[in-house]
Image 1 (tube, one colour):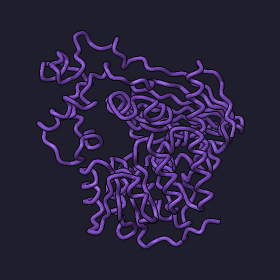
Image 2: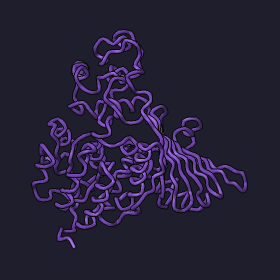
Image 3: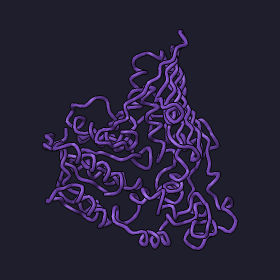
Image 4: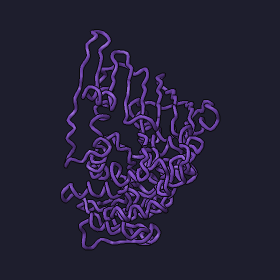
Length: 430
């Protein structure tokens, strides 16, 4: 048994490893929850991000470190460490933080390989620590309600589920073409980096082990041969399709100055302070100023995943860059459920449940007023942080602790293995 002290502080104290967009988001939410949380330390190599985190903390005694290694040289500074670094930097700081005695709020994906994820789960058990994975969809009003409906038996036995995630074309180019997740080797495969949310909630809703997976997908559109004629390597290099030249390219990086300005919060060196002139100069040299068809990206822009479960049910997931929002269809022996973005957009209904016996349909409209008006990830960001304290104090309900979230991660890695082998069926061995 670990000799690490089990008592937690009041308020629960937080240190952040990485002060990027996700860590700042969770920290901002924590600060809205009265005196339940206190942000005491942070580490990031970019001084402007550390400055932003210090401001968010509201803590005069906030401890700032220029690297994770520097922070983790010290004895445990807080009850919980948020690991909000890039994918390839999750495993080592998470491992060291567990050894130091921290509980973890670990951004997804937990690590770059299945083996590393399983090792973190084993280390959490060894040191009697908790790892709460940021599978925020479990904490949204929508998926919580879907889970409740399934567990109530209203749909009967679940026979199959189909889910779809439309990444949205600008999001695809920002994150998975120009951005941090454009190359698998430098991060994780698309199905892990983006859709581990989806494989997680599918396994959660199914409440059964997945036995085998097959998958197809590829990079079809964001390739150099598809670039418009005359396109330059950078949008800022006089490209005829860019706005300053009268062009109408939907992926023109100049849109970071107008309709897509909010995306700068995640990548511009200073999270909050910038002028248009500074952004233009930055676009001339940063990855986010490149032509969307002339990057070094290799992750897919569409993929399908088929899953076979131990209970006899099946599921399928479609990921595409060329739609927006998540939708789901669930087919049970007593009823079927349809819901998500597509239904909401066309009818203003969140989900519709059809009873097979009567033919009657029940329409459900959820209250979308997220606490403190914070609606990130459909309210899931708020829901996760709101639940975190009770989970770490052993007072919380079922959650995305790593031991409860392994299934979706295994599905994701199996899907990529299958895709790379021409759709060969991959059996999941635990």
